[in-house]
Image (cartoon, rainbow, N blue to C red; front, side, top):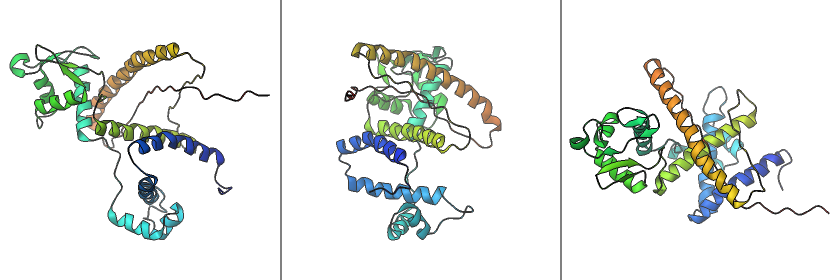
Length: 278
């Protein structure tokens, strides 16, 4: 039986939020015991970092009181080190940068948002080649390494003329479980952080809106899916270009950088039947 001091609406929301994550864990063999151990680590780390008094590190006893985690486990987890951060892996951040340059910077695009097919080799395409694109972003990694990885992930394709075509207008791996898992962590973390901030009622709220309908035919759902894929992607690309321009302007005098995430998603499932009122 739950304590009456715990908000029932919050507990109900947490139950619903956890369902897709539990579904993923069961599919991948992550048991309750494994997840419970992970949760202990997160509870201890968040309490340690974000619930300090006078900016002083809390004692093991205080963290145990806040979290309900046994003091022995608190001590062990703090000694083992910090919890993993949610930063995207380097190959994804580098890839996103490359796609942005390819889509928005001359001579690699026909117009902003319209990436050109690039000859693979600089010996063929010169400054307008895939080799040159990679070199414009990083001198420390070979273009062939990037190409092989992107072919594996389905981000690009090679044609018969040995030209590289961008398959996606944003860096979204079509294959590669590790890369998709990294985006799961990044996107859900930031979406949840915005929603939690808004629920707290503190400070300026973050933009977080959605539309939802529950009586659509499958053909109408497909119409909406295509609209989101087309119009939604154009909106995100426009915001990406604006952010890139602002970042270029800000960098020379930037003292305290901030990161942003702007998201758009689409989901559908059969509507749960409701019992008619008598």
